[in-house]
Length: 234
Length: 153
Image 1 (cartoon, rainbow over the protein chains, first blue to last red):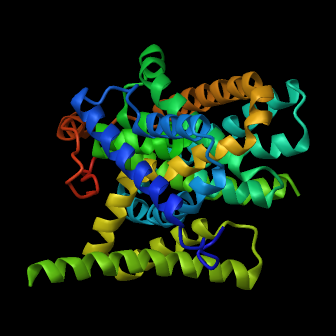
Image 2: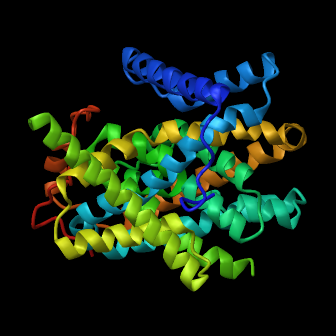
């Protein structure tokens, strides 16, 4: 999908599901605030889970949901472009720690792709699945496009990326404590590389410093991996 | 009057994003390059701010809002997994294994490599305290202020 070929206007059921998505999201955002921002109260997971349950219970075809939902995907592409802003904002901090930043990001990024491909190979995944899991350390709007580019499945790629992001956010505090990672810059960088968009949103809620490192790592890592993967899978 | 002006600022910010994405699409269409349009759009927008030497107010506000609520835009992508439910039922365990293993590994590797390579500046302690207050949704996305001795390698 691209901005040049917008989805058609939602029909009435499309509008209903669009509004239901918005309403549930706003509700869960407030609920999370009510519960002092605990990690398990992720608005994304709860909203998506309830919607899937509703679609299954009432036997609503997915196309009815997508008639409205696809418009949110257009906004996802726009918000991806917006990553350019934090990257510009934080140019100075990053420049000061440029070498460790780039090196850690590159090694982390390689470890993400390599571990995904290695586990995939051990489990006997075919080319289609390998090309899909290879994108798992890229932020999902980019991952969808890359998966399409290298012959994977965009929908599955986006799902894996988002769920990875949530897993990363849930595991990160324990992992950082275990490994004695207490430099907020290192935490942000790791969240950006391994938990992309979800990680960055969480990091931004913790502090501006962690958030800016996560945002830049997510953006740069997404761009660099999307440049390298097509060559790898050609 | 002020309301109309504020609204125009927001619209200009949104338009900047749309134009950046369109530029990305056009660069992709013109060159046939294997880089996704949203990635090209990030580069276009970064270059735009670089040329202006600042982030326009409207763009900053719209970009900040969209990045904070990016989770909302992910929802349809997750719901669309329903289309693959038969396949997912078979691949659930392998995929869960991949997700967990190759999320923990880059988290640990990236954080440890950076922390080993980057000496911690003295200003770090102060800046950590500065940032200790959680950001609320109403705040704009502000760059972190660094001090001179915030030096890397």
